[in-house]
Amino acid sequence: MGREPPKRHWRNVSELHPPGSTCDGRVRTFVRRRNPPDSEFHERCIGFAWCALCREYVGTMVYVSRREVLDDPFADLDPEERRLLYASEQRLISRLDQLPERPPQRTRRGRR
Ligand SMILES: [Zn+2]
Image (tube, rainbow, N blue to C red; front, side, top):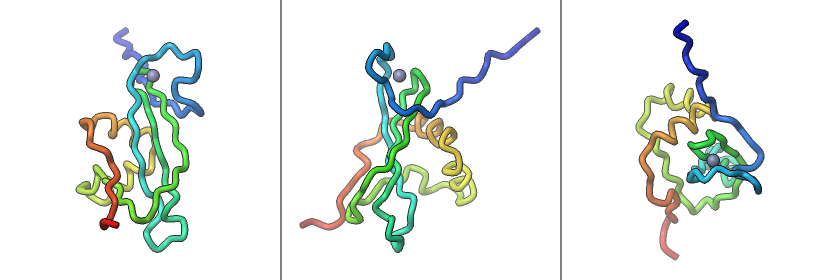
């Protein structure tokens, strides 16, 4: 009695909306740096793409030049809260999906 409907979890898939998929949900994306500026892997970032309708997401490695600044929507969070958020991909995607649509995330440092 009074059973709650199962919670819909985010699922990590290898391909979002593969050929044959009938989902017409909109795909949103987010890129984040994983390594600090002094790391030789600073330019290796993780790109996420997700669809809120089928609650599936993909995470892939993407290359972002050091000259590009990535906007961090969670920059104002408490450091511990931020750490917890980034510690779980599901939690991160779920939080990102609640954010309003943002302008393109990348801006280039300097003008050349
Ligand atoms: Zn979908």
